[in-house]
Image (cartoon, rainbow, N blue to C red; front, side):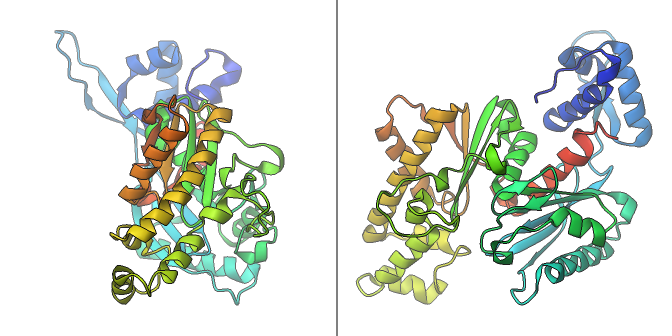
Length: 402
């Protein structure tokens, strides 16, 4: 929910949560402005802020510039290093562990791959060992850590921290990540799907914090999406988010999607389709042959270099894929009616892809304002920002700094 304080004793936690949320999303504010924005009495706001200051959660950082002759207002802000969070991103193309401050800015970062030879307990023991080593390198103590945020592919029961169907990792079996990691490490753990966690980050640190209803769409390697209503994640049956990529799109297709269904939009626009097309063009295109010699086989890690090539055949093929995705996104907009659609992922980071997408979606729906679309400003931190934001939300904001 967006912040709106209420002066009732039984909603003390809500008021505390909203004070922290406002300072985190909008920066330094005076007590007077905080009380006004949240509709709190001065006494209530003073009590809340006094506790936060005594515990080091918020700090006073000087005076507000004023054109009047009256006393300048003291500004309060979140103490970004009050605690740190650990973000764990688990993905079949490569995983990441990061330690960040409360604003999602990294203090330490490690990339690694899940060893396919390890079973689930072994894989998480390896992750726990890496976390301990990273803490030792940064000289952080257990008391400095607020908690761990894990994001992973597929639907997640976020209430119990269970990955229900993690595509392409752990053989797709259900994994109680929260339970496993909390037994291995002395920190609370929260778990969320990768795109939902990224939307959490957009709601905290990105432009979605200024928007009532938001949808994020990720392209690369597959297609993922999630939606929030008034700042709260929307999930339906079986903890499913608003997955555009797994809507039925290709009638008569026999290609089995990673979700187990056939006909999914993702099967036609997946990175695999693009890499196969690139390889098929190497005999006829000297541009492609040169790129293969320079960059090696196309993968998620170098695909932006291939998408930037001046190759007419490849761009023509990409345009057909972009058209299909544009139909899917336009249909989702008609259903969810978001105020903003934030696009991210390696494929969307290609200028040609973004420009063509805007052109195609405008042709499909000329009544749709292209101002609704925006590339994520958090893309450089996409490997860890979701887990960090979800941990901050779960262990600081929602409990009201408890």
